Each structure stands twice: as C-alpha cells, then as structure tokens.
Amino acid sequence: MKILKFKTNINCGDCVAKVTPYLDGEERISMWEVDTQTPDKILSVSGEELEPQHVKNLVEEAGFKAEVLRVQAIGGGDM
Image 1 (cartoon, rainbow, N blue to C red):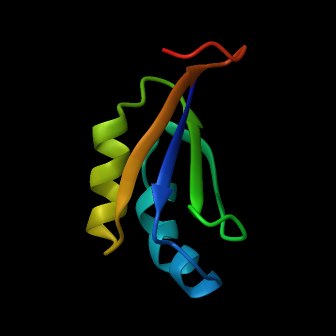
Image 2: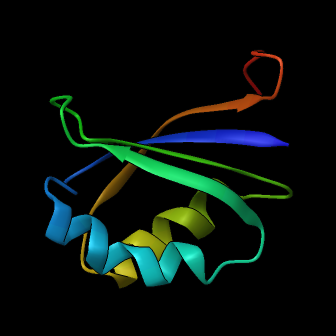
C-alpha cells in the first residue's frame, strides 16, 4: 500500500465536497483526506497500485490543482 501526499488548492468544505465523487469513485483509493487547516492544503491518499499522476488527474478533473509532495510505502519509507 502507498500513501501519496499532494499540495492542493482544496481549501474548504465545499471544495472537499466537489472532489469527493472523483476520489471516492476510484476503486484503488482506500482512504483519503484533505487537511484544509495547513497552508499547503495537504491531500493524503492511500491505496493499492496508486500512481501519483492518476490521482493528480482526478483532482484536476474536479477543478483543483495538485502537486505531488511525497510518495511513501506503508511503514514510512519514501518510494
């Protein structure tokens, strides 16, 4: 399993609601959350066989920006 972290412009509850169908609709994503309290509005996504570019494309389809910050394996090591 991978954990992907993205810097986004998803900055409020309405924004989270707009991106929800895109991320919830991807079966390879097991869990995701956006920390709208941090300056970088960090989106964390976990799941199997996730590709950063695919998640970025989903966020962009919803009308937001996403920049890959980190890809790590469960256990903490960067990939």
